[in-house]
Image 1 (cartoon, one colour):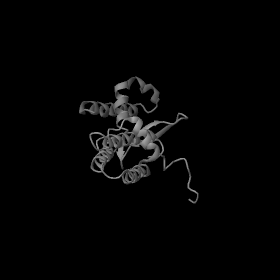
Image 2 (cartoon, rainbow, N blue to C red):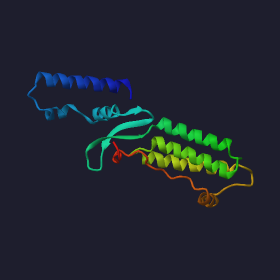
Image 3 (cartoon, rainbow, N blue to C red):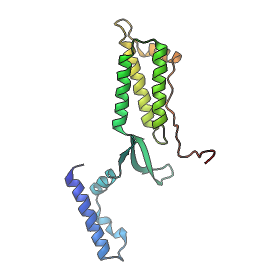
Length: 177
């Protein structure tokens, strides 16, 4: 967001506040002609907040009410995927059982922290990219041992990775509060 647009938002907010103070009996709906789409887009962008690895943003629930939604922050997601790719590269020559055990623990740890209500899309993306990274680095174990997707899916049938799971739901209540 450039400074020109942010200054425009603050000056428009100030003008609207001054107008509301000068005419306290005026309904807020009469201010609609002072608001344009560009102003609303910048105001919406300001409602995004990144905190503790999550991007909190405003959205609508299935019922249509305004809610705060959360998803994995882009920087944290890319950092986690980079760490998975580097780990797969460093440990590609270890036995499959050891690789599977460690990768399973890494995925479960990611799900334990980022597995909150509304973050399923980011969890699924992380799972797919981690699976792809594992396949890539298993294919690079030697020149002859290239794994196509058919062979890799057969390998996944034996060494199944845990699917994405929502661990912390805001809709489930604790048994003993």
